[in-house]
Image 1 (cartoon, one colour):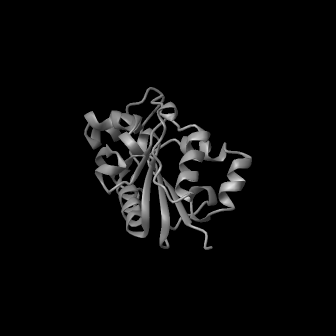
Image 2: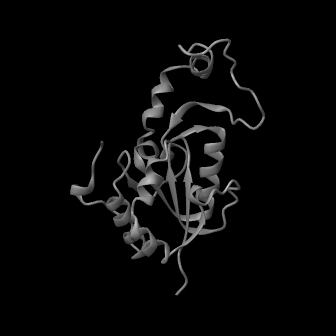
Length: 180
């Protein structure tokens, strides 16, 4: 039987969900032996030209144009899309900037910080422009499954992946749902 293809991406987030994925320890070896991991920040891929995949997993909110383009590309290439972690599911802590204009965010971050002297807002063609607001993934593309948590515990991610491998869309049992 052909292994299902899996791709993961990391948008505006802290990497906690992928760290939780790595915290599966020996369980990760078992799961990875059952899938073909095609694209993932775990493999340090910089080119998000996704091949067709069975499952796409997104960590992080959508905060800049590159995030939007990456998840739109992934959505077109995957059969199921799963949002991992509070940032992907709800927008996360990054949505705290949503009450400010983009100019205010950049000025506060690069010019007016307590430790900045002669601050300059970075400007380069390789820096993707910020969106006006940080969005949860489902505000940009259709999402098939949600795994909340900050980050979701390794056993929750394992449950989710095992359900997907069994051909079921994961629905977390009540005892696994935490919003902390």
